[in-house]
Image 1 (cartoon, protein in one colour):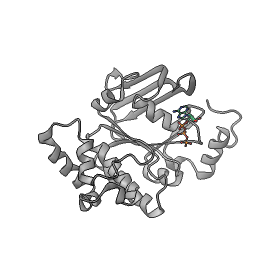
Image 2 (spheres, protein in one colour; image 1 turned 45 degrees about the vertical axis):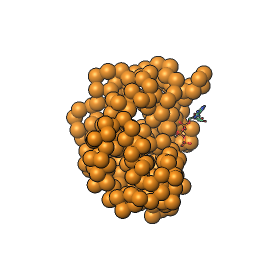
Image 3 (spheres, helix red, strand yellow; image 1 turned 45 degrees about the horizontal axis):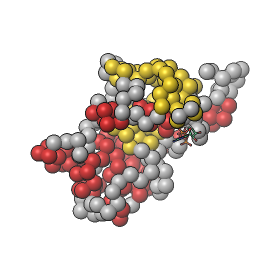
Image 4 (cartoon, protein in one colour; image 1 turned 90 degrees about the vertical axis):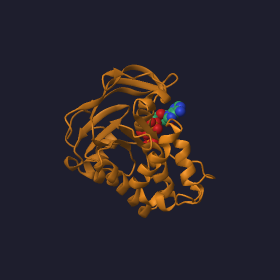
Length: 247
Ligand SMILES: Nc1ncnc2c1ncn2[C@@H]1O[C@H](COP(=O)(O)OP(=O)(O)OP(=O)(O)O)[C@@H](O)[C@H]1O
């Protein structure tokens, strides 16, 4: 594990308008780590990613990012700080080619550098290189998900936030997407992944953080928790034999 902690979330409370969803999230993410955020439906996993990306109402706490508190920054500024977000669901331009989608994703990059950045992304995702002239909307779900990750990676983020990349994909496509995420992580990319497919998430991530009712209730190595214990935590918020919820 890298020693440097560059993302430090403390007492984070956030939600949508008057609705509170995150109820005091504490989480430190060292550079280079691959973290899976898991938990039951409605626990606030996606809300945490959206909050890190400036899309919710922050009610309290802090998001310390490389020495400054970015809580309350707008998404565009957060992107500029080196945090990219791959939202859930299809988010490409379906009637544009892969090449054109990457061009669109490079809107923050100076023209003369765009080609180099596209080549960098094609080196990371050879599957997309083969498809560069294909319309995004004509690719398989898995290929489109890779394109969306690639569009975020094009910004060379220091942290990549990925929300539910497996939704709607076949098992084969899920395998491809997660293999690519693993390769990205091997290249040094810090990743925060929200994933309902707990089996897959536990396979790829080096750390599992479990949320329930807007709080972190378990944080550790995937190898240190069984699937049965995970299910019990999701349902009750406590481990077997525990008298009270740990939060
Ligand atoms: N834009 C929104 N406006 C109001 N409430 C919202 C909004 N988005 C999400 N919510 C609510 O916030 C709560 C947490 O949702 P969130 O998507 O963060 O949960 P999650 O842990 O990611 O769950 P899931 O695995 O089902 O996606 C839910 O009750 C949801 O209905």
